[in-house]
Amino acid sequence: MTFLITGCPLPGGQEGAAGSPIAAIAPFILILILFYFLILRPQQKQGKERQEMLKNLKRGDNVITSGGIYGRVLNITGDIVTLEIAKGVSVRISRAGITSLASVDEEEKKVKEEKSEK
Image (cartoon, rainbow, N blue to C red; front, side):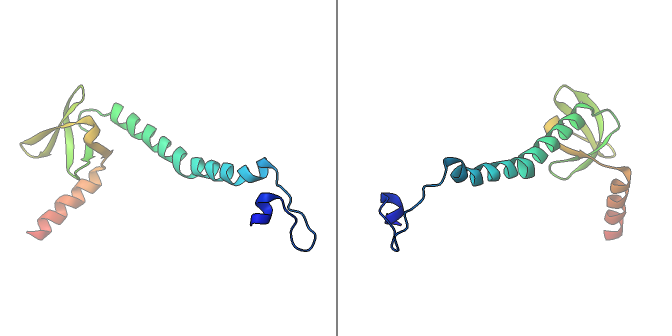
């Protein structure tokens, strides 16, 4: 290793060749490109889709909160969303607390599971 650093001749009469700086940096550039396409780009796309979903929320949508609570949107005022989580039970949460839209089928399955447990 010291022969390569100091530039002294290697045993056998061979001299160490200093590689080009581009060849030394190329693996790092390749790793950065892979990191962008495999991690950052899909995450940015998912974030944009979530922002679009939150922007397009409307009354009557079935949603799932970040706490895993299923509910139906009753009212939206600014950043506050009022959800009905059971008959006569409503909660107010931040719009950012909604993770995704829920299909009616998912809620029906949940209700059936709760009834079968009783």
